[in-house]
Length: 330
Picture (cartoon, one colour):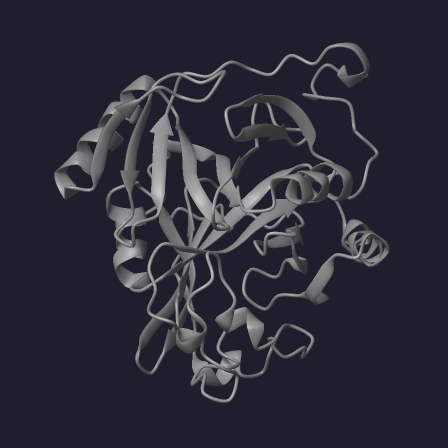
């Protein structure tokens, strides 16, 4: 089944940080996001080609991780259909006021406990002054600061049961599976799209057995050269580079992984123009032997990719590379 397209797109994501000033500097100075207001303990940030007001809601908290992930519905009717489907699962929390510039949001969780919201009403961003672009079909002037990410590309959640979360994304939210990691003991990761992109949301197995964690949030850039430049900028800014630049086997994107100061993993991603247009697309499964070959050009997956997530788990529960049975599985 193709995606229902009741979910128009992955919209804005709340990230939690116990180092708010350092994290804000990372997102503004290194990633090139623009501040667009604040409320309480939260600062609203936007990528330059986001038509809505907010791309990231950065919230001060005791521990890092992901707060609410927001999805925009494709119409008021689509919103009501998805709300009815969510309510039938028992995972709904009810309606709440949206963030500044957004209408009512229906709040719920996935089976793993990640908080999510779906809404339709929104105000389009209107740039003024120096932020006004030269071309009126662009939301904001190119900032020319840091990496200057264009938009959110996808989010990757860690979960206890990737299958339950995958099926929720498909059966309840109307997504479509594009690729999966299928090991001898079952599905270890599932890439899901709500649009014609290769993927919007990913659920991968948390080897610590902990629910509700974030693996990474990914931002799109225009070219592979931007990824190389992002690595050089990370070096200059003293930002931890975890792995890359390199090319993924799954989905074939060119990538760099860094950690922002609070420990949340951030991916810089050039997905190129790879779209899933076939209405009868069949999920592509990758087995353990294929994944053990590493990434597309042979770079082995770094061990922290399987053990690091936010919020962090207690040290005694964190698996080491020596005890990780799937050390090269992703």
